[in-house]
Image (cartoon, rainbow, N blue to C red; front, side, top):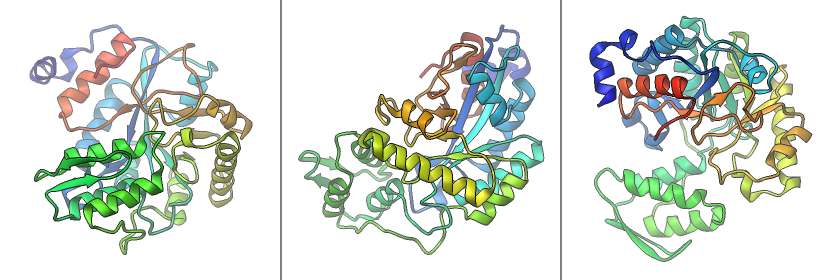
Length: 331
């Protein structure tokens, strides 16, 4: 109701009169494009190109969009500003980040921060979330009889979005063995998970270098893109260092920020921040909601909110403006 009212009276007159907390609002995206054109995970599409362009226009006008360096300095208590500012981040390094997002950001004269999983860049690999989606969408079965992590039957409706969400949730549980789960899903669907795809899903190193030259910021999304909560101290150290070394060698830039894969509260461990610091990182991003307040932000757990436009532009406007006014996010 509030979103509908705000849309009716206009962005300028809705919540702009509210006082704003001294905070950083980080908005995260995965893919920008037309979800219906992909045979893979449609849930990772945050907005169409036109919708994303509208978001950037709104944020630039009403918040101001800061650079990654400015955001990290804020999170570490090294600088501050009056009111609220926004940072735009993009996980996974899909090729549409180069084809679609990069030109839009450049047209607005603002910086985006792109977190790359180095084992995917320049390859034709299909990541686990897209492989699961392919199996769910391609099966001709009316229900899934899954034998792991527990025995149960899950009906498949016409859209299959509910089943896809459930399968992703099961995979991301820290106690789930990923390979055992993918094997069980292959049996349940009768569809083999694709390892590679003819059409490249992820940007290559030349494209990433062009984005750096065009003013974009690059960070790590680890090397493997596996859940950190499943990894030991030594495994996390190795993964963090490997990703950082590859990015710096390939792109010739300093890399000291990382976005944690999945980013939920259970996707990383209590010693992840110490591993990051020992690996040479200065900051890291989670992804379970929240606003980052001045002098009260953990630089190794900078909160992000979803830029998904499933609920429409007016709801996006409402959520960001209320977050800036109240200093917290609402579900």
